[in-house]
Image 1: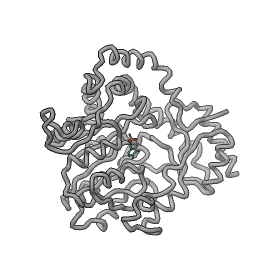
Image 2: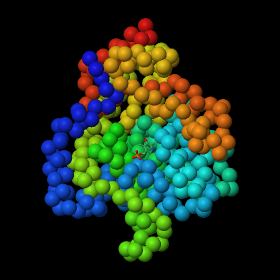
Image 3: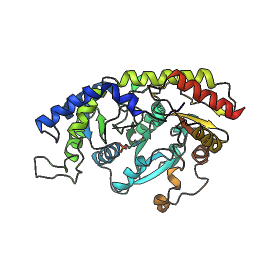
Length: 367
Ligand SMILES: *Cc1c(COP(=O)(O)O)cnc(C)c1O
């Protein structure tokens, strides 16, 4: 038996004809740049995420850059974020001339610890980028309260959490602006790069629409220095097909998670993902805290089970951020998690037989 970490064949092959038909329509229309499919997708995603507006762009990374630009923060302002996330969360802050200020995470949810945010706030702090890691929203009630108290903008990096909820509210719709990635491994994945910003604020939405086309409005008149970052029309066509299935796919991931909870709970050497009682997760990843993590990885790989470490090095320790003068020991929880976490297959089409195999191999390893 063999189980990949993610199986895009299993996801895309059954709907390939449908996708090809929609791609064909774009090719026959030759409307490659901001064709009608982009706007249609924006409407669908806004509806799915409970926001008034959605603005497509070239990637989840660009969605973060565009969102930060749209907030028009003073150059040199500090933006608080988690140190335990994908690189793009913090690189986007750096790229627009702002300063990342890292905060440690909660040891079980892996999300930014709201109780540690206030200590990181200075006179220069102007925003927080919250990440809904592995598909579980961060504690948005506490975070929004802090943001209001200190008058900070909030961006939700929702690349991994489309459709998840906190306290009944849809992730990405709670702060000033939310960002999405349609990278192929996310719950809603394109066949290439694509991203989107979502917001309830019309002014921000209008600015985002200009910023993604060089900050121009009208054409050739530039109010801002924007990007060339449009959501490709062919990718929009792919996503218009796939968006119909995303709810079901995320539900299937939750069912797979439930099966792991039922069958791996009694293994004392691992801790299963902990979901906050006000949160629901879409399980973009199923991430364990595991004893002897590196040996477990070798064992699973030897048995042809896909797994990965998200993320092996917290961002405050990355070489490119050495100018921020963080050091080892600054964020001990994230540093510890980087040594202990492992993500195992959770994709929607995973079969019971495959899960049983994974479960038996994990048990065998710790026996
Ligand atoms: C995937 C991801 C991104 C970046 O998305 P791209 O579409 O690959 O640019 C940003 N933040 C997080 C947390 C991600 O998981």
